[in-house]
Image (cartoon, protein in one colour):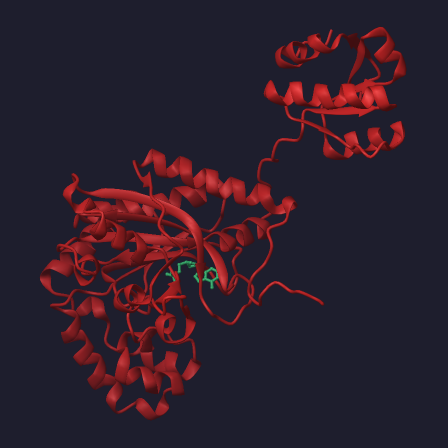
Length: 421
Ligand code: AMP
């Protein structure tokens, strides 16, 4: 029987792990710099949480969720994004009782039943950064800067922000009316998806990729001209911070993001080296979400970034992450007595904090030395019959012919202080 990984999933093989480690460690470091704490939430939640938060008429909820009835017949969903779970924890664990704002990050898999292509998977990893409890645009810029600094430290080039405002429950309905009127006489020129969206999710008409739809949406009224005073000021203040920090950005009227919960600021970070999927992250404010899922009124903002896309961009740009450490020592042995001594020494060195590997299977010395080379060990210990008789093992630094002989108990301290004279 042939088993295959499910479509849209992949395996992260050892040779790729250095990329993953680098992105994850950079995220941890940058988040700590900005005072964001790690939080982790389940990878599945009650289906209704996502329906309520992401929004019933979004692509995610309509078409992309992995939803199943568990054995108690309760409807569960593999998380399609990470924000909803964090907000659920915020409400359920009464985190709103703590001094605000709370600043969190989390890293983990998300699941969407999408058409797989480069940079688009059905299981993908997101790093997700959220600040709950402040409505200050200075927090908006802080969140955007977290994303920026992560990419900058990783070394991605051609970074820029796309920004827009999606208004608030006061001004957005007014704008939606304007949009509805504008599109009314133009419905027949829209693609089928947009004709359907017209009745359900008007904002999404703006980000349709279909050319005919784009021509129409280019001329549609822009939300930034319809914002209420509060939203207008918020957007102005955010833009002033982008100017102060000299971050390249563009006000993108098409940027509405696919999730219902956004209010005010929405943004993406674009990077070169990503091709058609040029957004390496996306996020925005969601001031209404915590209330919607049963908590107190809580302004909040966050972003999520696909780790695969970051790695794709790294590879396009030839960014090589630091190598993961190779084993420091390889132990080669010949003969039964030497093998027992090797089993013991391997354990003693590992317990002493030195990374060690051996080949076992009683191979020839030549193939053991080949393996030592292949794993990139710095030192080899060689134990044969002579060494067992003399009680002194050979320690050799790879790539050098010089070698020293040491009794087993001298090896660990010598490797620890790195003295090879
Ligand atoms: P979203 O949650 O849709 O706002 O997406 C946030 C970020 O997650 C995007 O900018 C991508 O980097 C990443 N992303 C979203 N969907 C996928 C997917 N199917 N495969 C890989 N990355 C994704």
